[in-house]
Length: 428
Length: 190
Image (cartoon, rainbow over all chains, first blue to last red; front, side, top):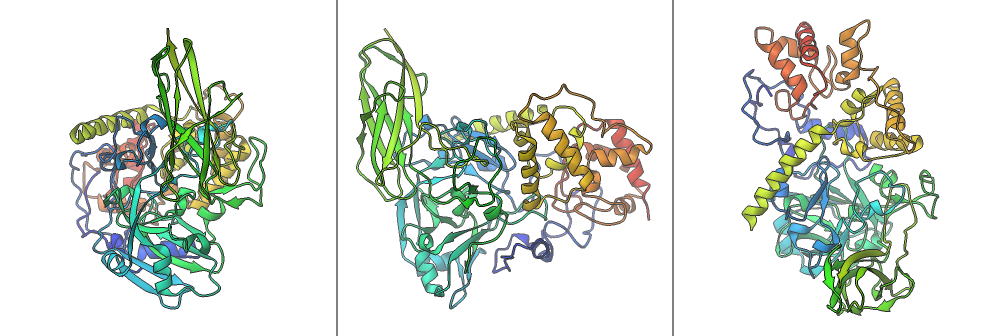
């Protein structure tokens, strides 16, 4: 690096009511970026050809973003595994999830672009499109105007568990139980905010857009839309707190959508614009990514033309204790613990198998919690013989759906919910 | 506890950075171009861990275009697709081979610009993602030490001198080649 910009930092990172290119035309996106003087400096700033100071971090950090090093200071690196640095993704394994509420230091990270560094005092949320009255609210106004609610709810990346598929589809290599968490969220109901703006009768979807941006100005903004029925549901929030503290920057500070139970990409981080639409949003994050075939396809096949957008997660569970390869003695009680959840409905029962799925026994369920929170289960086993002992867990929902042993393969590797299996050693 | 966490994080990042440097795409025709193009936006792990059919790689490239990757010429796209399908396909990969697309030729500078995808972001007389070569030459016309520093920067990458867009590093380019490229760029004075 020869020099730093002598000119004042461009105003790219102000999040006032900016025009959002909902047609996602590259030209308008470029115009928006260029118009704010941002990533591409149109006018040459005065440059000084000088020796650069020694870099403080090993990674080049783009102004207006948070470095991965800073993001990961908020994670428990004794258990947190980074899957990729650009974009930043990471998670903890099942045995590090043995908590009723996912600690913030263990919540998974899935960025599509960079982590923006946002000034909450300047941040604005605009609600536009098919509304009676377009609204622009500061974060304080949002908190003051609407009733705050706190709830525990699942957030899980659509690709969570991808490495369970054979052959492995492309994308972040989430372990079979990585890429999800169940913290407590505080925010306002999206429905209350939409009602304040007045949703028109022909509204079908609402799209969330975040303030994240990528390394080059040509990159498309991350925009996902959800049906009005899900948007108006009482558990869908515009959240600002996670586990009683402001959202960490990488998790969407100062505000994000929380669309519980659904593929995580619906829960737009760094939310700055909601657009009410008369159809699902058209854009690469709706039409090329986060899609799943209507019917199973043979492993290795390409995405069918009539694929659909990922929505609610199917029923799923994981064993959080004992840890894989833990050691026990014959006769010593082994308490198998885990979590079960479903994106639409409720957990009805969980079964455990001690014989690789030949027979199943009922596990004890913890009391039902918030609608979209995972539900704990436990199963006591006292081994009578030495050797390798496996535990399989299978959850059932209230519609009679159960986890399969192997989930249907799909080209982007979404919605892995195959039965989780943990093996331990029993010594004589 | 938190302090320990931070130290662990720093150590982990340092390890990651080292690991990332150590991991390069298998040498083969098009490896350099593929590295240069793809590493602008994401780390190479996304390729290194993948084993996909040619059709799936085609879909990946289509998806990257939709996501807004800087435009590829058809010829570049063919080279990249051939390379990925051969070396990161579902069938066993061929033995590592010289990157013929990075080897010399009638015009060594043009070959180097092609092979390292410099021209994805730069042209001689027009600003694209990065500055025009002509503007770089003009800026540093009076600076005797410019060539050496520019050569170092071509290899190390960085951000800040011409805006916020970082330039990806080109560690595979030899110091001598980087120096000839730097001298060539500094000769593009208007």
